[in-house]
Length: 504
Image (cartoon, rainbow, N blue to C red; front, side):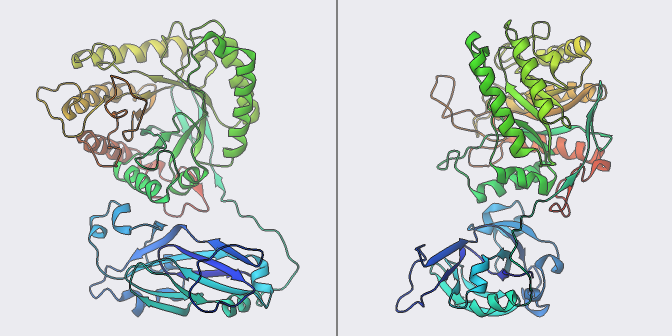
């Protein structure tokens, strides 16, 4: 460990805090004050369940004496959370036995250098019996869940700090990924090899939380992406939390990073005021996300009225500006306009098309999808000679609704619609189609309208992250696609990636 670092093995809601006054009497809730500081340790911890027959392998091999990853495979586990509910591993759902959590924390220099400062590790709750080590030293045990317990680790922190000498410095770590991105007339290339997007569109949305950030929800979503075999997603229709982008880097999920350019549908939407703001937003987005290797393309808008006369100059300007900010990545926007009327597409590197055949028109007529979709792809490619991504497609589905023959809103209709799309995609991906992104990963809330039953129900998972029938269809397809392109494994290599969970 370096100076001011402590490595802790424990679980659920811990924090470190330093204070110049000794605690007396009852256990005080840690509040900051002029004399007291606190450092939250919530977030992602390394995690391993002891699946050995006697559930004591961790003690027998002394996992607490070295980094947990050296003992065997670990998972990223949010703290606080219940490990049983976050993953897709059935063994964890009802596991009883010892589980191990590990987190490395960098402490403020003052905590380790000021001899009068006490440093206390506080565990808010760990169910049911907890043993805690810091830097391999046993510091606490506690039996009984729900209630907090503490350990004074001042001596350990100060001992660690004394092992390193030298002037105080400012440190910042940034994981680095090295990869190239290029586009030809018919291919999307990562590290010089063809890449096919098989993924999802998402929303930052869940019940109760709304758009609020939640580590447990985020890890559940990423575990579902792994289960699904998805290798990519689009941040529809706005930039997602930075923690999401960090996990994409870590796990090798490829991202089409989209700005909040949605609703650009009126003539005044293309005026100078809107344009100037759009340029500023792209500057902010590129400045924030340009160091994320997972980001392989910028999207400057979703479904604008790109057939309006001002759209040509507008998107020419926005796309050129974005390329100036970042010459290393292709730029696109997502269109639902007619190929012959779209004035913005001439300036994109990849054509991203949204279409909902047999849903918003010709509804109920699944038999027309293949002809209409094949025609869509061929006309776009003939006109522009650029690779094409089916950036949205899908159907509303109420979980538990079943009809055969398939009727709209039933799980059978969603599956049948997807199968019709997949038949054409399998033909065209051999030519110039370079990706498919389902709409949507999960159901999400919207404004009330007669067409919405408690929100948008096009998810392959419910808003509570339970699979509909289409999720299993898509899982079979995506893993087949992944296995066909296993030579693309770890297209995004970074210091933090380790062994990627996702095959490319």
